[in-house]
Image: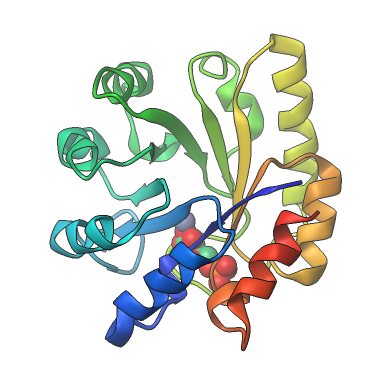
Length: 215
Ligand code: DX5
Ligand code: ZN
């Protein structure tokens, strides 16, 4: 059984309400929201005006993934959306421990995200303080990219670190999740699967969500 967090980045932005209604009706556990600033990643997605509209329409817990520099500046604004989880990149936080504390103080769960080139061992001194680790399984910035195979080793390493340290962190993966990679990822030890194009690009997105959940 996996927690499934469909990524709105792959939805039809001309008809967001319809796509969010589908998520509300579906068995999706969370909704994954990708914020990009054109600085931390080479793309810009959507900002707070859109997030507010989404938060109003969506009945599922919001899993917010900030691909931006200085994410600590926006903790209050993310909390005000009613977000359940705020994910910040390890690579974007100089004082990660402080930022995690501030996210908790704002009443949210805190996730730390690793780019594909950042090793799992970087998390050794923060793993007990976070609620989730989000492993990027593609380079962040775009949907529809090819899964990086080495990510499977990173999931296994992270699972071992979590067991060894007694951390309660969930393992979420993001990028290139499809019928094949989802099975490999679940076997390697993930808890949460983010899926963009695999869900929203399907004729029957709800069926895809069920397929991922049942792994
Ligand atoms: C990429 C985003 C992902 C993206 C995944 O930077 O963080 O959440 O939407 O898209 P797929 O599932 O299509 O690879
Ligand atoms: Zn994401």
